[in-house]
Amino acid sequence: MILPFPQPQDNKAHRFPVSVKGIVIHDRKVVLLKNERDEWELPGGKLELGEAPEVCVVREIEEELGLIAQTGPLLDAWIYHIFEGVDVLILTYGCSTAPFSEIMHSPEHKAVGLFPPEEIPSLRMPEGYKKSIRTWLDYLKDAKIQ
Image 1 (spheres, rainbow, N blue to C red):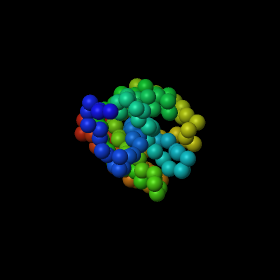
Image 2: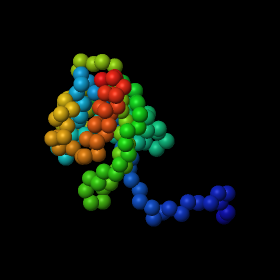
Image 3: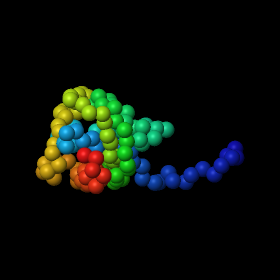
Image 4: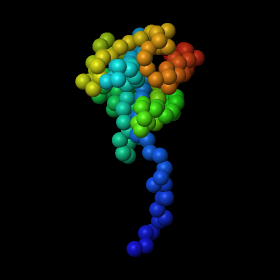
């Protein structure tokens, strides 16, 4: 059988799941979720096949926090080495939401927290998230949006 197009020969290439995360700021505080590893993380989740990253982060923020978000700029892309054999490509977006008074969190997380920016460096969370948060806060400060 002759195939109409050449088939890719990347079967030895590394493959990573893609997780799309959003930075949500409420009342000058960063919204974070506590995961099963007792780490704080940004809301978001796995990119579904055929889904645009911007659609994924909006969907995940609604599922995890009950908030309707809008995506801003793509802030960062990095590989999170969770442990041996488990690596994830992380995309982080700055996000905005309508003002809210309450946040819910889904059962997939242990807790939800709102943290002032000065507390972020001391939290148990991957450095890549901390870097993305700093980038978004600087962007908002420069744009005088915060």
